[in-house]
Length: 134
Image (cartoon, rainbow, N blue to C red; front, side, top):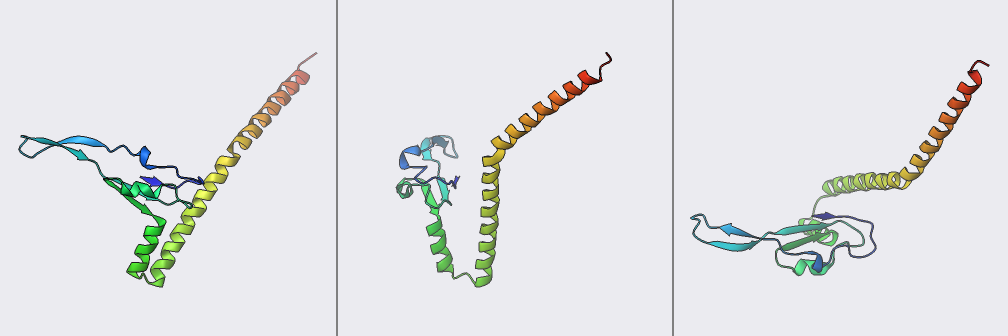
């Protein structure tokens, strides 16, 4: 699960995670057991979308930007790799912002188109009426 919103508070909290359990049969089909399906949550939001307490839940792995930054520092990625990562992130952020801007203006554009269509129909009707023989 990937979470990346513009929310100012936590979007996902521990109570939102109900462990998915299912029966798994042994290879010989003689016995079954409850198995919890693992969940990986990637929180890419700033500020965080996922409550850090989610990481303490059994079967849940939480990866956030802080953890990614620590991993990058630990691996001592060279400047070339770091620049490539920064470029990719910047491009994705720009694309996301463009998407958000489009969502903001879509209702206005639709209203303007509807208004323009209404004027066009009225002009066409007026033109047809004036062109009709008397």
